[in-house]
Length: 131
Image (tube, rainbow, N blue to C red; front, top):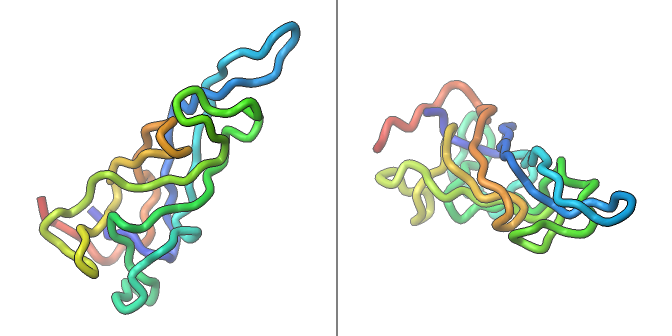
């Protein structure tokens, strides 16, 4: 799969169940959750993929979107628009000492409220074919 870097890429997750105000009482509503790759920190500034810093499993995206209406917080995480981080990647390709993340890497989004996956590639040139 294609390596993740700072150029682009999107992680999508569903369901991000958040408590939403509704009459007569608040209800849990499942929302889609979207994390944008260019917002990721800390990246690998000395390893460039097509000119953009590479991402490893230590890279997090500090803010996600999609669950903005669930202002009474997520059911599992107690947050709204929380951070996203990848859980899987190319474990035999190390970038600055940590495994590289790639397209189809599984993520946890809105802290721990929503499972997700990288669905939009950062770039379409560099492949990580490692298990």
